[in-house]
Length: 404
Image (cartoon, rainbow, N blue to C red; front, side, top):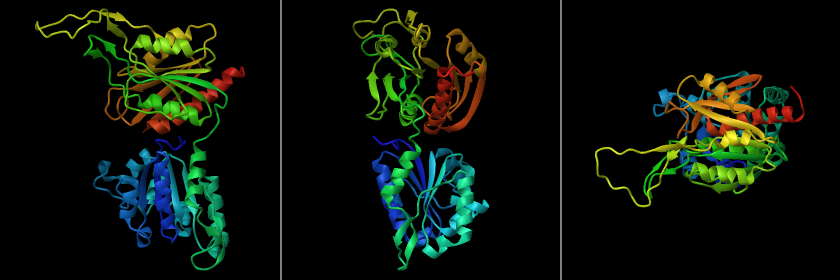
């Protein structure tokens, strides 16, 4: 499965004959499992129709800066938050100049200013335009600002000229995007994660559970894989499917999750407990469906095992990261968890809002470790996972190398 699996990609299309290749870029990205939204400039629509991109992306095409169907009528903000990466292909000389100057006179340029996601361009223009000193200066400026430049290629152009300026082929652009998510920060490191809810049976029909969707845990598993780690995922019941390069163990209850963790924890370097494990389970599970008789029913509960605490208490424990899903006093409870369970890091996030946390595609987090903390603002769970794995990798390697 590709590193682009479940990545949110905004493809900007500007005016140029190479726009026809962008259709192939979208199709290939979709084949890699990416989610694609297309933003077109007015000039791009002179070369190819929005309907073509809507057909291959399965999403409406965006072109208006003020979108009445977007959140608060500001489509650029919605797309800026949604994107894991923005790629402009083709990127015309005019678009490159606008990006360099910081213009915000259309949806695409405004989006590039508003997003915190990486921005990449695939230049496409006549060879004489590409050779101009002004274009070279603009490209150098964008590179210094962190914009990635894919190409251009050299060869015969639509006008009949031969030279540099052709947009890369669609396959080359997709390959370059895929490499953006292949950091190798955790190369050779074995990572185990838990994800999703647990279900604690009451009878053969009913159970106790919670609202966890598993999205954050699965996103972290994918991000760890992209960082070069060997990944095992212990998952409670959820509707998600991980990369086929992730070793998946599916369980139902907290006791089953503990058993799966303990059977595979030997040799694990990093343990990330993302699962929302039920704190209690019914003391007795009825063998048959309990019939509704009285107006009330008493259910006796007993504590479930503490999976994270069990792993963190081992004499040869791995680097342990816990999650603290809270509705109040976020940092207070997270710091207590860090100390009481002998953890290396705690990732605290609020779950009392529909905008972030359970079931949402977005999240925010405060990460706390013994001598520091870092706040991550609201973003997609996919992008947050990449940022969290980068931080975790840095802290893990510092500890492994004995650095303070």
